[in-house]
Image (cartoon, rainbow, N blue to C red; front, side):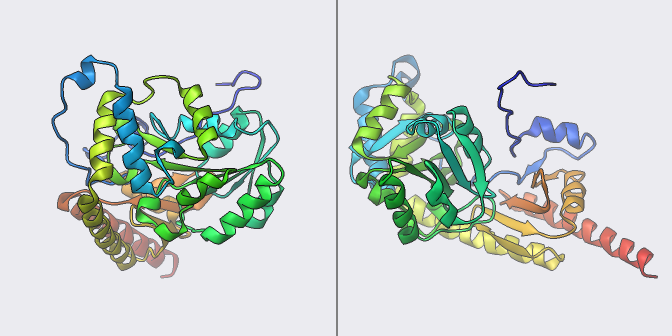
Length: 351
């Protein structure tokens, strides 16, 4: 379908079972969805008070959420935290904090940043060198990066922020996966300097993507601007309750980081056993780069195992973590089938 003039195309993402069903109609069900970076071991579901659905969210409860988020992420105070129904809704609003100009995104990375910048009126482009970001009015870095796990050092980002701030620019650091990243590289504690917005996602690490909760950490004036745009009751009652409890549960968070590290190491060994070496990622997703990536994606998809592939990067795949032992066994069997077929084709080519 032809888009109207001036329209900005939507971006293809992982996690769509409808798209998977259309692509692999004969695959066994249920699908094992490894196409996202969402934790398959979600924070425990608990019973919510009926008032979270029957009443409008209370401002005091939102204040509690902002305070616990500031503590969990290392922001200077609750006044430096804006809460939203997911970080996705924040992207064009954050991009619009700077008057339309040049937006540069350190890529390749999550494609929604360039799209959001274009929606905000910027001339958006990806660059592959962090030094080039100094030429931007709006610079975006995903840290750790999705999908390869690249990390840009905090000191380098602070230098970049100072360069941009001096000319009225803005540095946006998307720390959606910093819950499992090197926390010392986070810029959350530096947002009070101005010229920096740090985005944090709730749903990925806590495995509750459907709750739709995310945060922008920034100087207090920027937080006020964002909250004005979002309006009252932006965060739903159930999201408030889950955010307050989960972000304050430090024991669960520490235990989960250990579990994810073990699962990621197990996944690396499994892929390597069948000739697909992991090249990077985080403990929530693994990054593979291999010539047979397209064939591996299709072979696993036909067996009901969904990986994330990327248009324009046919040699790249991203794999999330299986959620239980049955999923691990299905993945192992599918990889074994793929490796066997690959070996057969090699023998046919080189008899």
